[in-house]
Image (tube, rainbow, N blue to C red; front, side, top):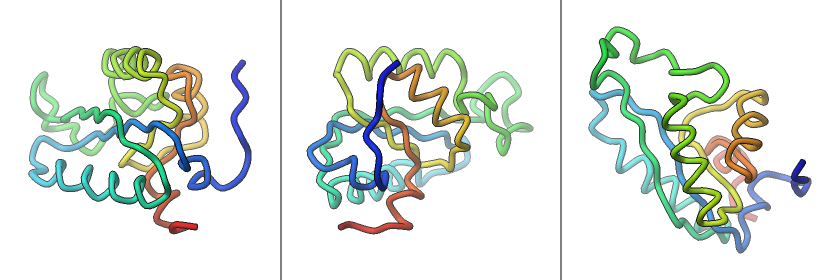
Length: 131
């Protein structure tokens, strides 16, 4: 099992290759701007954004009625999207995946194992600010 450094999540970004991930409502027209803000926070902490992954909720399969509910309690995003992101993270040797959305500790652990990198939420960067 991969061991992750300890310390504040924001400190893990210094010199790290980072992927950004977000689950957004299909009605949310600001998802790109939200990812741009998160990219700015990552860069302020010394990270380098190498990819972005977006899952839109409510686009198909009756998702409009479920827009506020995550696809999965384990991964937040759908299983297919989680696999897609995992493959991209492993191929690019990403160090950290930063989600726009809040994550539970359980989701962080599951996603970290799946992605092969440390997983944090953008909330971790906002709370601590740049060092």
